[in-house]
Image (tube, rainbow, N blue to C red):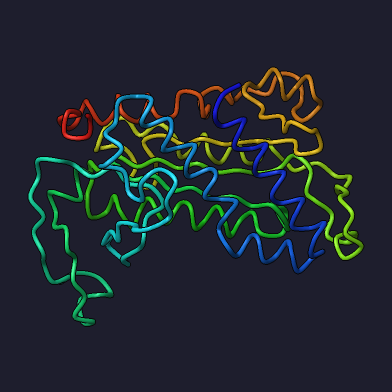
Amino acid sequence: MAYIDEQLHRFKTIFETAIFNGGLKGKESIIRSSTLINLIHDAVKYELIQNGIDPSQIYPHFGESRPEMKIAGFLKQKDQDVCVAPKNITKVKRHISWGPLANENAIDIYGDEYTRRTLIINVRSQMSSIGKNTDTLFERTFAEALNLHMMYRDVVLGEVYLIPVYEYDEATMDQRRITFKPHQTNVAKYISFFSAINGRENSNDGLYKYERCTLLIVDFRHEQPVLYRSTAQLIEAGLLPDGFPLSLEALSFDTFASDLLAIYEQRFDLSDLKC
């Protein structure tokens, strides 16, 4: 079993235990704690390490949630979920003299070159109110890439996004019961969106794109959560129509780290990130 599948099993166990013990408040508490999403962070870090990345260059380190690297983009500074920092580049502290932060006396502790050569990965999940919040979440994801690529055209960005096929039903949580809503998530909409912002192969491509996106489509109704890995699997499960033209394989987690690192190697010296 792949490490991501083990982490998804832990995700389900911890999430459902929180509901059994605390009902709806337990669910809200465990999500606010970041315990669940940190499991996916560690799955990303694990894959990077398996591909030869020096664990000491990954921030936060494997199994830890601090410290994060606070990267200065065009509009804002933001703590990034997973970063791989370069070894042989000197940090250059500078005042932020651009965009909305110019008048706030804000400091960037890394500088342009160090930031450009940092591999940056965002990790997100949406476990409830998916249909209601979809467009807002898409806009935020779109804006994050713009915020960084407008400042650093060749920085390598990754995005990992987790959605459930069926949402947990909050109506039964206060009874401390685990049930799922009957309607399916519109996975076609998610595949279409992430396909449109995936695969930025060179620094002249659209600034709104990520070098590599991964969409984790998961059915948590099973004892071992099912992570869909192909369009054919989704069609067979009735989650996509026959002949759906886009490839989930292009958004696969299994090749996420290796694909990102291959793009990084085309632009920079990969040995700066490796053991």
